[in-house]
Image (cartoon, rainbow, N blue to C red; front, side, top):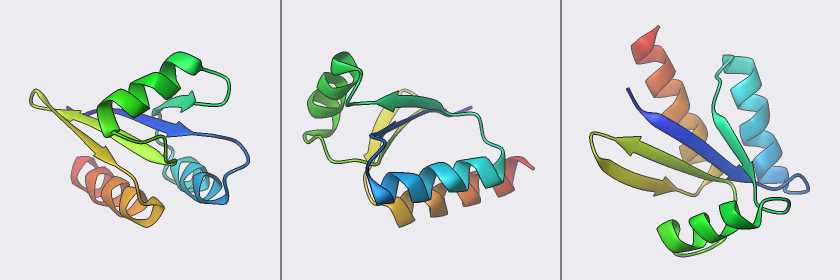
Length: 85
């Protein structure tokens, strides 16, 4: 099972695209607003190397991947959701 967290901030249109996709897929993913949560912002910078959002943190089989592009994030979630359905 993958552990997922989405780093975002509310005024980002690309984040809105990903958040709307999460809603349409009925996925329950941990959300981390980097504007309100300074620790989350620091995690994103330390782990991914930049504070660009949206960013999906994927923890799978002991490995961590940081995925930044909104379209890539939605495509990944669609693929993973289809495999578990």
